[in-house]
Structures are given as C-alpha cells and as structure tokens.
Image (cartoon, rainbow, N blue to C red; front, side):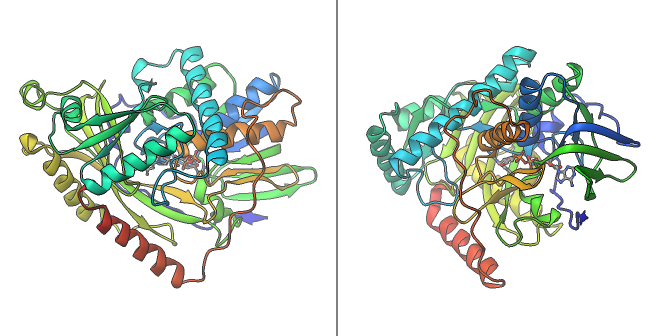
Length: 447
Ligand SMILES: Cc1cc2nc3c(=O)[nH]c(=O)nc-3n(C[C@H](O)[C@H](O)[C@H](O)COP(=O)(O)OP(=O)(O)OC[C@H]3O[C@@H](n4cnc5c(N)ncnc54)[C@H](O)[C@@H]3O)c2cc1C
C-alpha cells in the first residue's frame, strides 16, 4: 500500500481562473466505484490521457480524480505558451542538438495539433487557443545576442523566423523597452484555465469519463489484479491507473530524490481602461517569451476579463514542495518593478492578481514516464514546457496503458532513461538556488 504523504500548496489566486465566470465543481468522490482506467490529476497530462483513452477504447469506463477544483493547480496558473520549438528552461539558451531538437519539434507540434482538435471538435471559446506564434523579446545586448544565436540555430534546422527591430517591438507592445525580437510562428497561446476547464467539462458532458473534483488520492493499493485508489470518502478500483500529477508523483513514493521542484510566479494587472489603452498603443494581443530563458514572459490579453497585461518572472527551487506564506509579497514588488520599467505610461496600473505555481524538472531533462508496476503508469515530469509536454505525456501514457495497436499520435516518442538522481541535500538546494540567483543577476534587463 502506498500513502500519499505530502501536500504542496500554490500561493495566491491565479488571475486566469479569477477572470472567468465561476464554475461549479463536479462531485466529490463519496462512494466505492469500479472502472477500467483511473487517471489521477486533471492537468494537461491527465485530461489528455483521458481524452486519448476514450479515442482508443470507446467502451471503457474512465474515471478522473482531481485533488482540487479543476484549473486551480499549475495547469491553470501558467503563462499559456504551447511552444513548438525547443525551450529548455534550465539551459543557458534554447538551442540544442539539431537531431534531438527536430524530434522534439515534431512531438510538440503533435501536442499542439491534439489541443487544436479538442478546441475544434468540442467548440471551445475562441480565446482558449490562438495559434498566433510568439516573440522572443530582447531588452539588452545580451538578449539580442541570445536571439541572434537562436536564429542561427533555427537556420540550421530550417525553421522559419523573423527578426524584429526596436520599432517593430514598440509597434507591437507600445513600449520602447525592447531593442529587438525574434518571431516564430508555430506557438499557440492559450488561456490556460479556460482550456483546462473546457476540456474537463467537455469530457464529462460527452460522457467520456466521470470526473471527481476535490477528491485527492490518499492511498493506492494492489488488490488482486487491480488497483484500489482511496480518497477521503470513497474509492476507485481500476485495472489500470495513470498518475498524471507532475512533480507530486514523489508524494506517492516514486522517483524519490530524482525530481527538481521549481516554483514560478506570475501577476496579472487589473483591466486597463480605454484611455490607458490609447496611451499604450500597440497590438490588441501579443505574447513575449524572454530571449534569455531566465527572463520575463509577458502577454497582453483581451478576452472575457477585458484587456490586461500578464507578467511571469522569478523562480525558486523548493525541495520540500511548500513555500513560505509571505513569498508573494516580494514577488509582487518584483513584478511591479518589471511592469513599470516596461510600461512607465501605465505606472498607475496595479497588479490585481499575483500567484505561484509548481513545475517539475529532471537533471537529464527526461520525463518520469512509463509503467511503474503492473497496470500502474506515470505521465509526469514535463520539464517546464508542461502545456505541450504534459499533453504528450498524457497521450503516450494512454497509448501504453490501453496497449492499443492504433498508430500513435506521437510517433516520435522514444522511451527514455530514468530521471537522474539529485545531489545530496543540502548541496542540491544550495547549488540550485545559487545557479538560479546567478542566472537572474546575469539576465539584467531581461528580467
Ligand atoms: C507561473 C507559471 C508559468 C508557466 N508557463 C508555462 C508556459 O507558458 N508554457 C508551458 O508549457 N508551461 C508553463 N508552465 C508549466 C506548466 O504549467 C506545467 O508544467 C503543467 O501544468 C504541467 O502539467 P501536468 O498536467 O503534468 O501537471 P499539473 O498541471 O500540475 O496537474 C497535475 C494535477 O494533479 C493533481 N493532483 C496532484 N496530486 C493529486 C492527488 N494525490 N490526487 C488527485 N489529484 C492530484 C493536481 O491538483 C493538479 O491539478 C508554467 C508554470 C507556472 C507555475
């Protein structure tokens, strides 16, 4: 029997969720039920796994258990860039080895196509998903150098891009902060909370699966040929179980001391008023990722919550998964500074929401994915690019669990080595924090 022994809390309310109309949660699990497949976790990996299972096995009973309300966790807290190109957060640049990059690009595009199919087939609202590309924004000489070397790498793998000068950047975002940018067309930007809510609700409405929210899995036991998963006031017995809980797989006793738990932080402004938009100028919507991977991500959005700006920067390493309660006070100040430096014309605009969220990396940048024990699968450790890589992990694991002979939607997936062991504590935490601080300091104006 495995007990889930730790809880991780994200701080602050995600602006993405808060600006949407309140959603009624699905029921809490309060009885003992049986099914063919149990999926634990309703993020990108879990919902994609459930969706793929339904495609592969039309008659199967599929249950999803989610510890919180859908989209309250990291899946509803991220910046919403479903990026097709290599984007290793932990590296000094985005460029990698060409043949590996090409395979990753094909996999990322398969995930974006899968999300686009969901949007089309279930008729999600348009603001859910916009295949509009993104810009790697550069604010200083170092940032421009990153963009230039990334452009050279894109040349070698024949990927299209456009280099933008300071005027084009100002025309896009209304700020003179940036000296250049590199546009690539293959990214889709999503409203993450809306996409996740829409996918969960569509799966329930289509009777594709039963979803239980606010129903954490607390114990997992092998009973004969099956698995019994117990929550607070009910249980699910299933032939196959997919754990899609990202870094929290460690709380189930798997991959111990092999996963790095990183917290990222984001803020969203209040809705901008009409005169502020006139003052700002620029395009109605845009998305900037940083030219230096440790720098700031920015978006301008104009959906159901009105026009707002969203910032993401700062990251911290938290081996113990939890965060000090007052962490967001410093982060909010940092985000206000970031915002005012870029948009001095909007210095009166305050951040309405500020929040944290977790992601999970492995030292050797591999997934924690595969069959752990007979009938028990992991679709975890997305290494940063979790909207895309979580979707891939869900699809691939569903295909493994169903043992389907159908053609894979991600034919480029290859099984990988295990996540490498971390260095012993306290060296791991000290080292990771020192590296992050050094990279943040070096990022200068890009942060
Ligand atoms: C501020 C921020 C910005 C980011 N920006 C981007 C971005 O622009 N692009 C990108 O690709 N990625 C981004 N990410 C990363 C991305 O959000 C994650 O990698 C992604 O959410 C991982 O998806 P997942 O489905 O594997 O896990 P999660 O989204 O973490 O979902 C796992 C789910 O499992 C549930 N769960 C956990 N334990 C249990 C249990 N015992 N029982 C039942 N349920 C359980 C959790 O409540 C959660 O809902 C960002 C993250 C943050 C925090």
